[in-house]
Length: 187
Figure 1 (cartoon, helix red, strand yellow):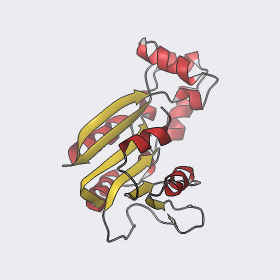
Figure 2 (cartoon, rainbow, N blue to C red):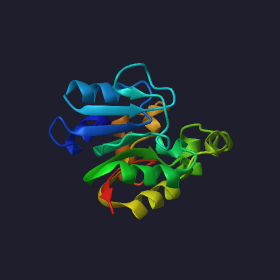
Figure 3 (spheres, rainbow, N blue to C red):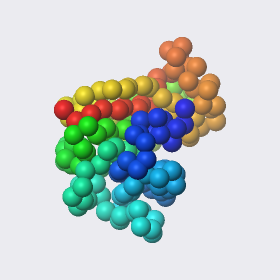
Figure 4 (cartoon, helix red, strand yellow):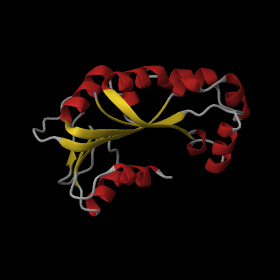
């Protein structure tokens, strides 16, 4: 299931209030807005438009609670993960959910790197300033009660590998999953 479909499966009926953290070019935010959700999408380089705010999650100032907060491949970039996750807890309604799509760059093993001609030293140097899997997972678990966790394909986004084939290889234990989805409610 692609991430937009997954997010939609976790949302209340419109006009629920949704925060997107690290919206990038805004594709997900625009799709949710088109379906009738009240969306606030933050990113330091967010596009122009009424639903977008050029800021970080840590600096977001919004007094009204959100029904859902969505973070897709953005939390590993925040400078202070604890501060960002605490902010998310504070922005969610009492019955709110956080929906996360992330990856653990540090889960790439030597065999998988060799299989796909990935230079592990270069990979590690490129990702060294990002939060790794365990830091992300621990931070989420301390603040949110888990409703869903699944391992997801990641390499097929970057190397010549079909996503279905990657999923099969993960399930067979031939390669590690690098991406994951997490859904949880504030503790």
